[in-house]
Image (cartoon, rainbow, N blue to C red; front, top):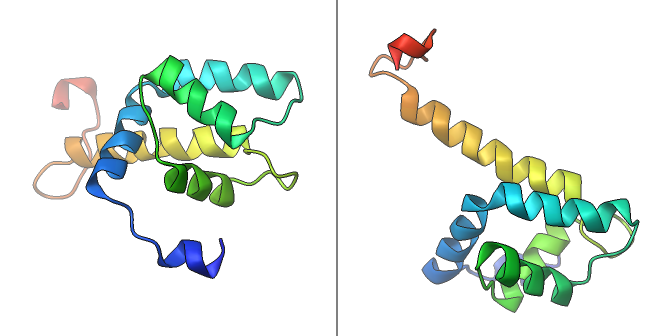
Length: 113
């Protein structure tokens, strides 16, 4: 990321919008996979439109810029597999923390949940 971008702050509304995007990550993943299979670069504008249509989320231009900077595929586009993996990994981490007991251990079976 550029120095200017790294100094910018994300508003609470931006944070909520990204969280809303994560709620629809499976549907978004399918749509993004179509772009990847066509070996077509997904522009920032197309990404924004896709999020609105598929996930019902509107991200600010600043957040889209940050996402593209962090998940750059080296050709100026979005590295779709890396982006989706990061979004899904966040959900897995959150679920594990949520299911951790007071002693800091994870359940060993479904009956322990």
